Length: 191
Image (cartoon, rainbow, N blue to C red; front, side, top):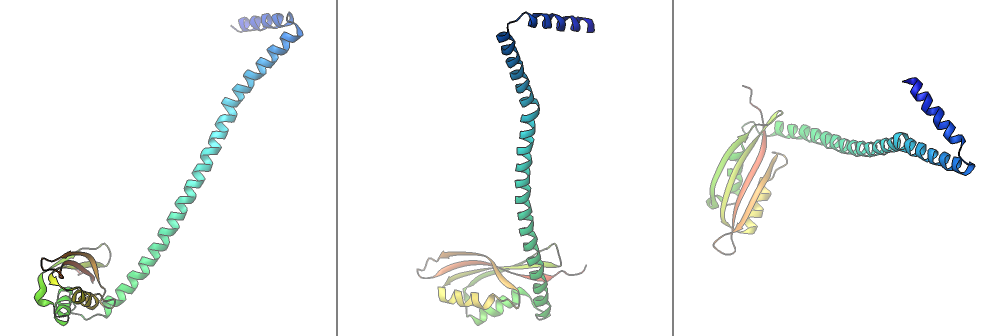
């Protein structure tokens, strides 16, 4: 087998010896061209492709790092907010309930007769707090009365906020029908 290969190489060399100088240069140039293509496609092209992929990976990882840093800052801000929320919750009255608070504020705003219903609920949270919700439906209220009620219920000190709001025009023109979902946080009860 090896002897066959050696014979073929010798016959090729003998064949090349019989070529003219011009034919030898053409054969050498063709061989160099084939070797160049092989080098390019087997070595240089994969290297350039891997270099391009590495650059793309670096750009993608840098973008991910920026996102991670933004999320980290947001997380720290939320942790600080949670701490201040916990402080506010610990300062409010021991018997505080959202339902009672809203009922009292509705009386002060003189819209108790406009309340169609108040539905309390509790959503269990992941950390130290549960979310206490009360859905309130108001019928045929004026914008001024509604704004006064909103101002009286949103309370940083009691950590009360409007989570969702739906406003529609009442059948009686100039009045509004409103559904509010009002929320606060309460400490989890120990079982």
